[in-house]
Length: 373
Picture 1 (tube, helix red, strand yellow):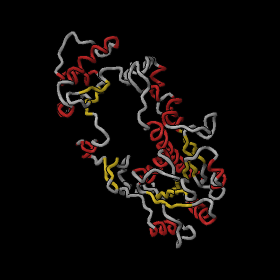
Picture 2 (tube, one colour):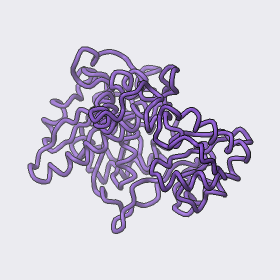
Picture 3 (cartoon, rainbow, N blue to C red):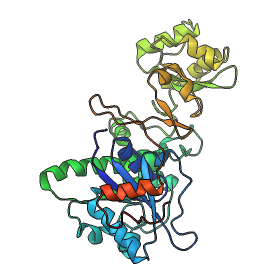
């Protein structure tokens, strides 16, 4: 059933961050209906259905059509949560802003997912993950010493600092509503979220432990005992033996026994130490090293692509990856002992399923549902 069983969510179709947040809610058991905007060609285009849409229903509504607007309002009246990812002011122009919807349903949690937030000088401008994490300070942390910052795909802004933050905000709003009986607006901005993810680094910097340029600090690839190394087959292993006892196990596993070896924490000789460790890893393949360190606390594991991660024995043992509609993807997380959610199903858009949803939500016109997405 899931811990959010009984929670109803209306999601306006859009790009990755808001759909990811709604996917998390669906994974936790909420009933999510994605509204695709109909109308003129090109209006309301969304990416192909995929993992971000698992566990959801979809319905296509043309907000210029009175009957479709009433259907949307009916869904909102029955909903606990409404999610949109428009630029600031767009929802208001469409007549579905917070004032429009919360006047109808005062218990509604209105989730707004944007890059720059609802206010500030950049709020009305276009942007993408790379822009948001740049001004938050997160992008500057990623990359090799002496090289330009390296975008970590769109994981930090869109997903960790975006959709995940939105889902967390919704959960907080649902909890508070149990006491007040009232909804509220949740302003989830990717700049805010990606900045939040750097809280630990700010503490390290304040204490003089993260003051070197990018790629020369303890946890950004500067330390040779917290880095990746190429193996004989051109693949890589990840090493993270920060604690000295674990570092000693690394040296033992690599067969390094040199009394002249630089001290682990002597940053002035890290390049020398990196060369020694790197030369050792080049002697075997990635998978050979993974097997050699499989039961060690040396903190050495293979660097796997997303497409082979499901093959790792640990991920297999925990069923960390699943298939939904023939697409392999990460399983829902976290896991609940007493109220686990059912396995995700593919996006549902059949006329009968939409008719049943409208009926469950007590939305008028259930016998003649609008076009499915």
